[in-house]
Image (cartoon, rainbow, N blue to C red; front, side):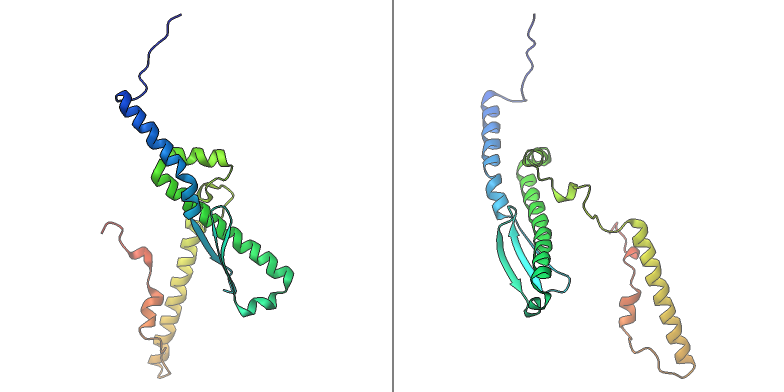
Amino acid sequence: MTIEHVPVGGGSTKDLIAQARARQDALASVDALMAQATGTAHDVDDTIELTVDARGKLLRLWLAPAAANWGPDRLGSLLVEVAQVAMREAVQASYNMVALRLGEDMTYLIEQLSGMPAPARDPQADTGITVEEFQRRREERLRETERRTSGAASRSRAGGPADDAGEDDDLDSFDPATLRSDR
């Protein structure tokens, strides 16, 4: 039986030792990076806002006086929902910091070992609207703007009050798709 010698890396033994120590130091800093990462979230009504770290430790909680109107059951479930959103944000922020330090492959390995995948990789996560949905909504907005614009023009021709929006019409009709990405 022959043993084939395969070089481990492209460098001297000192270089390999230095790389191994750098990786060890970087891995040791993962815990500190995760402690630094925070996520903040609030409910739709802006009655609750909280901040957590990547481990889920509550760092800040703010409740509007109106939060007392929710009742204990609804307030409790709302707190949990908002905390989960903040936690996902904090976990993603921590993985982003780790990836800058260790690289994407090592970060993915840490995700696998921890059992906490990055929210950006979660196949069950809500990724927002599809391109088709965006286009459909855009076309609806453009039709509505065109309808309002033509209605205001016909009212002004008929001697009726024109739409007082003035400069606001420009903002309503702005289409971000008209921006060029090559500038």
